[in-house]
Length: 472
Ligand SMILES: Cc1cc2nc3c(=O)[nH]c(=O)nc-3n(C[C@H](O)[C@H](O)[C@H](O)COP(=O)(O)OP(=O)(O)OC[C@H]3O[C@@H](n4cnc5c(N)ncnc54)[C@H](O)[C@@H]3O)c2cc1C
Image (cartoon, rainbow, N blue to C red; front, side, top):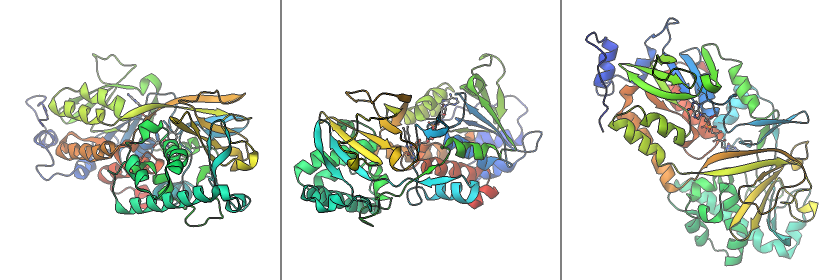
């Protein structure tokens, strides 16, 4: 790989010279580069591109230590953490659930640092098949003992137990390469339970079709099961210990932005980054509302790309040069698909017959090909709203649709996970460019925890003295 960095003129500052020669090769760390004052405020200038949870967290961690411009192309911050107002409530149509075991850093952030009000949302599970009234599986709970007494649920309970234990073993093994197909096929469970219970459940966890789910990384796909408290820990309590932000995840964003002191936020056309150009040791950043052939909207020392791989690929490709083409190629190797989510009221087409069979987390197998989830918030929150994945549903959800959204969602294949290391290797080889990567795709699985970990990783380099960093 070559960098294609060009001197900007005869008078080259020591900083420019170091950057152009490659700070890493000279033993200059990014942290030292960041410590050098670079604007009138005496702080290094940083553009954070993308105002989803990763970008907001990065800006919040750098706040006070860097002069940050946070750029978001939509009219509001949050990205896939999007809360919809309904009847006096804020309901999350994108990311929503988190817990102390699955999201340890995020849990500390919300509870100990930001003090965002949270509410327990324990998740029972129902698995059904469209057109068949008897559910395949209903999880037991203190107020729902019948699955333990009904012989029809003996085989599915055993299958779920084996599945959960194997998921934990897989998590402990650290193996990202085993696929869902391999993982489920290896279980000592009969074919009927695999077809009607385990493959559908995995597809629901992935948000994808059953065919798309088979080649996914099993460890990644079942992480929300294996890392949570589960049936294996306590059969009689609702199995999965999750929580919600009372006022939606937009409240987490609001808590962070309220503390911004050296962060300037740009939204919409002023926040949509269309072009980046390396100008000596600096970066020029153009927004959509700027003259694309004129002066940059912002000139900064560091760029943090906190936007998803697809738009990131186009942006870095346009910088020009071999290294940037390589980087664009790495970004293109993260596979994504389109998923649709609908918030609606009942009566719910997608629920099992009989309300006693309804759970907070409901999976419905349709045509043997698709198995999408419905979160019944009435089971764990005070409002009777359903949140359904509706990418491939044959039937519309129900009478009143509150909101509908499409998302580009990652397909967490073993290749996706391996590509995270390739992206980091690119950064290390090209550290002198002061280009940084945040975003949930850069680490582990697609979750709020990954968004935070990715932000922490950048902040450790750019603002190692951050008190907020020390709190996490
Ligand atoms: C339906 C759904 C449900 C989910 N449920 C959960 C859950 O329950 N728990 C959990 O932990 N996780 C969940 N997730 C995953 C979680 O939402 C993500 O991991 C996380 O929110 C992603 O944050 P991000 O900042 O990395 O990316 P994003 O949220 O995608 O943010 C990237 C931002 O970059 C912006 N952008 C793009 N191009 C440009 C540009 N050129 N210039 C400026 N800005 C740009 C985008 O508009 C976007 O706001 C869910 C995701 C979805 C889609």
